Image 1 (tube, rainbow, N blue to C red):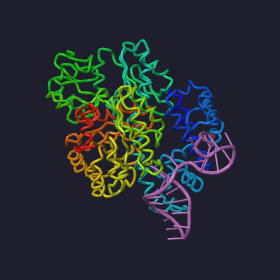
Image 2: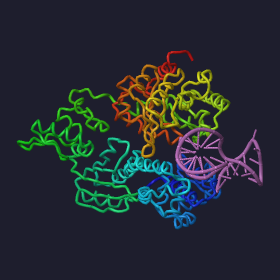
Image 3: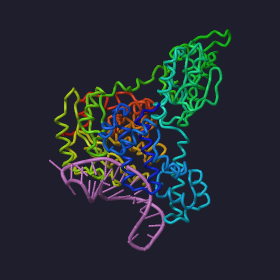
Image 4: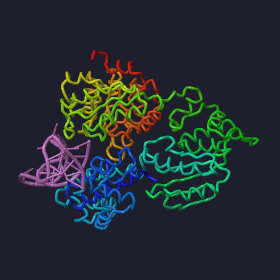
Length: 574
DNA sequence: GCCGTTTTCGGCCCGACTGTTTTCAGTCG
């Protein structure tokens, strides 16, 4: 089951949304939002905390701690139930459409009885929104575009959500005695950025016992289809989970079959066919005499086809089979190669954890170095100042080196519409490392956007461009620029591009990262952590890099500190 | 509803952007 912190945070977050929609005190709404975020990111499991300890969670006071206990222990909250009775179930989903907030959601419900996204689409079709106060044809068009963007995710969930759930389900089945092997397969094992449903694969000589155990998994609300070796379940959160059981002797072939993309599998089967072989989920067999050549492990199956083992993240038919044939698959960057995180925040700006807490967490990750890169003053709501930055630098220097962790003082600058940055060049030169990112003015012409990025890339103090396309998966499309021109500028200037590991960013994505590496660009795989728990997001960034064929050599935070520092100096003295 | 080197009340992350207005409301980062 989900961690109690997540379940409770979801309850508080729903409370905040419903309060906002019904016109509740905005400061109360914000209090619940802040508490929800704080609980979700709190490093300690709230199951272990009593009322007094709950009260010590930042942004949680005596009233919310009582509500947390109710949500945690009983699962119900009177106030939440009352609000749910007032607000139609679908209305809250409107808040997930970019550009539509609580006020407008309330308005469309009160005046047009629109209570869901389908209702909203129908109202748009009949041009009924433009009749409302404050709306017009342009806002209708913007809303329509936003819904389309939102729906393009098409019911797919983010990698992080899918992986957490899949690991719970796999854990639940792994403890069953009849199960020899169990794992997740499909697009999730390939670590695609979004996943439609979860595919589980188990090896067992007693499939009935596995089916029985699957049906009893506490995460599943129902099991609408169940055969002898195959079943489909739907989780309490509405996610489809398919499970398939194969004999232990077919484990490798089944893994190959259920992991590769359609194109990858077709390519493999065609290769087999040409060699007089047949590849299925049961194994690779010779057609003329039916002799089984390989089936137990993936290595054997690929090997019998004359191929090197293809890592799951590459199985998209994007050249990996040809490379496996000629033995030129790259050595992919791995989690263990990463020596430090180069983009993190503290509670000096919008992070949840203090500098000391972030440093301690980085030590637990056994990092050799950590860059602290809080927001810069142009992001006005963060209230960063020169004085605060300098005070943080002094505090950071005092912690530097302890526990073998070296600290770099940085900042995440804002690339303005004209490509200029926070602070003056003299002050910028005092930082160890600077990330520069786009946080505003997302829509401009391709040429203007290209020039804007190149100007930041060429700034002598800028080391990394953060989340270069500024996309938010299922929420905001990537900005539009000339990728080749930008990448060539980055390679020339010695500015790295980030692979941001946040599950709703994964930016650069796999394909752009690959193009960047091909053009000689160095990359930084960073978490953009806003809490200690976010440091764990690195695996998603590393997976994205693997999907982009990225080698450790291309990733600056796999390098030893001395080499990293030379890169950060960009050929000048600091 | 939370919080406190403006401390038990009265603030609360600030400013840009957009489309609608004709001086502003809603949304976002």
